[in-house]
Every structure is written in structure tokens, then in C-alpha cells.
Length: 82
Length: 82
Image: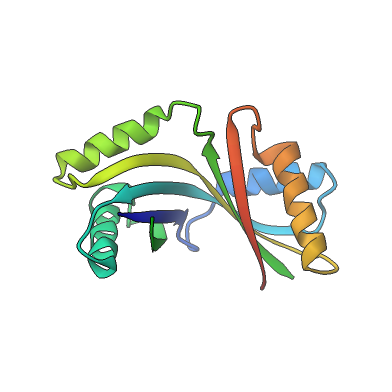
């Protein structure tokens, strides 16, 4: 059994309005030294696979086919044994 | 300058409807071996701080005061030098 953690953010070239709002809200709370806030999605899941490489391949496939809108989003992932 | 990555998920005791829907959608795409999908938020930001401990303290403070609804959500974070 493997545990996958997937991080999805807007591509750098896509303006992140939600991140801008969060940055301004943080500054309004006197966190003045905060920059470049990017909001994204985080997905945790468990999967069965023959080995770690197979688990990683499955995660990439899930991202490309369902979880990520690759036109505007980019993703990263970490797979570890659970 | 430090880079913080914040992962926010619903607490285990809170039913994750969105995660259930994603799990079913993945199974409909023949990813049969997927279990326990949890959907959450991912936030990346840069901040100035005197040292790593100060950066981590600031991130915790941001989470508690704005970013996380601690009644139903839990969070984790990683801080590294940027």
C-alpha cells in the first residue's frame, strides 16, 4: 500500500486571484513580510501497486486524466510506502 | 527569505464528501485500487523572517488566525530556505 500526496497549483503564468486576496488579508493582519501567495489543491490518497514506480505512474495518470486541468494547472506529487 | 508550503485537510472525524466523489470518479476510470481520498487546500508562500524558527512560528500564526478553520480542519507545513 502506498500513500500519495498531490499538490496542484495554477501555472506561474496564470494570475492567482485567490492567492492575491489571501496575501492582502495576511498583510491586513500585520504579516507584512509575506509575498507571492499561491493557492492550490492538496489531495491525499492510498493506493495498491506492485511497486513504487507503478504507484507513481498511476498517480501521474490520475493527475493527467482527472485531477489536474493541465491547461492552467501544474502538479507535483510524493509517493511513500504506507 | 523562506518558502512555506502549507497543507490543509479536513480532520479525520469530518466526512470528506469531495474526497468520496473523487474516489468514485477515479474508480469509474478503472483506478480500482484507490482508497481513502482526502481533498484539501495547498498554499505556497514566501516570507521574510529572522531565522527558520521565526518563519515557522509566523506560518503557524497565519494558519491559526486566517488560513485554517481549526474546528474542522487540520494542517501541516514545511518551511525551507528559498
